[in-house]
Length: 190
Image (cartoon, rainbow, N blue to C red; front, side):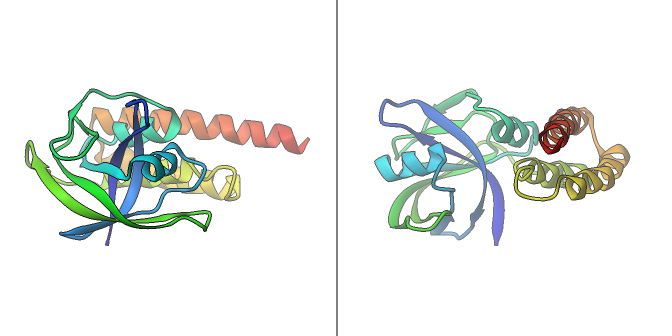
């Protein structure tokens, strides 16, 4: 099962990287599949450790996908890494095996520590729609932009019906980004 999370890694100087990522979830093993050109990939190759944070505020996914934020964090317990302060719970990981030849690498990791701060209530339809919209926002140069815009119109209906203030804020940020990307792509075609 793929679980959407916020993965934190450290570079060799100790600077944290926060990246939204769907991870292959298991109780004792989690598989991370970052693209080779990402900071997560470089950090996993260099340090071999990560933290998978489960968060219920979708704004972290949006900002992590659209920019290079540094969120409030605290030191991990077992691995060299950080835990997102807003995490409901987390898993600290140590890479056991890596396959890095493909465009999307595969790091099989052992869960070496579990942490918990508060109950994860889950996602309502609006939160799920924002996560889907976030994934689409990262694909504007891969998928046809008109298809993404059509999906955004459909997802906006879900957000309008079921969102709270955080989800509305996140979706507005995504809409602005995708509209800007659409205009840039149209300009490149002319």
